[in-house]
Image (cartoon, rainbow, N blue to C red; front, side):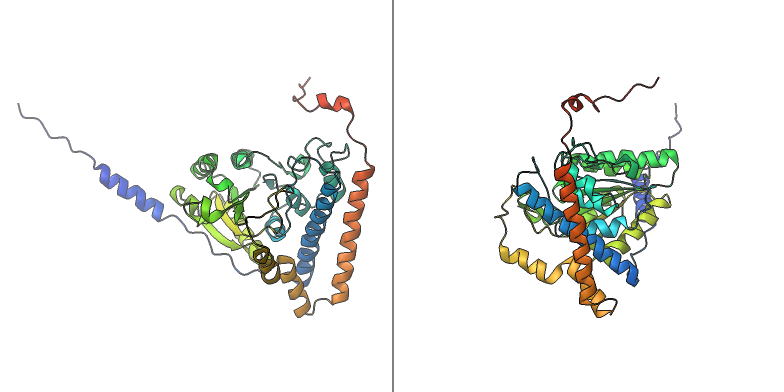
Length: 358
């Protein structure tokens, strides 16, 4: 008995069609050069200098034994946090990061006194002295850490972005991680989920050239970290992290992309840390000449300083006055921390479980 042949759908054609759909996805706009006004340049300068001087003071307090545990300084990377977080809307957008977190908190305008108190483990600290350098939080500012587990903050950031989408609050999550963490498996699980569900999250790879003591060229098979999301259809951009204006421009483009419902965005920000991975790292895996060359030719704070002076926005004396003011703020934060009491012993038993609602 003759049978009618069944027409089969070509899986090859379907695959080609799906690939074409991916290829034809809308490309995000290229970041436009950011033209800062005098007031903005001065704010960038002041805010970056605050991070620099605060971190220098934290290094001194660590040397005196007033800061225990690990302490990772942000010196050299100031333009990343300041440029990106100036593109966010405080109280609406959320931020999450790894253990090099002091600069990100300062960039959000959080009081230096309670940050320094936290570093020194005092009760007046922003996390009651229980978080220390690596685990600081401020839910009031939508700052969700401070995480010691490498790469863990990325998947948590995807959860924060899901929260923004679920609540339909228009918020965007900024999730920072380093070039070392970019090789973690959970990062790619987060990429996949974020693109599938079009989550409003900016994945920020702070590529400071070294994952602990290992050069990124020795640890990463592919050095274009901004392209790590290509397999998922996530757009990515390389950014000069030593130029706060370039970071600001890229941040605004990424925020606009996410806020418009187009899903996640990756920024690989090329930056450089002047100190070791942490205070216990002598950084003997690189030469002094390498660090000095970056300081002399690419320093982010000096770049803005030059723009202010060459643009005749202020004088050398004006900038000296700003530095003096910043040093006074930082010294006050150190004194506040020293004078603050340590947490009471019974605080060991608090903040462990969520309180049951009546």
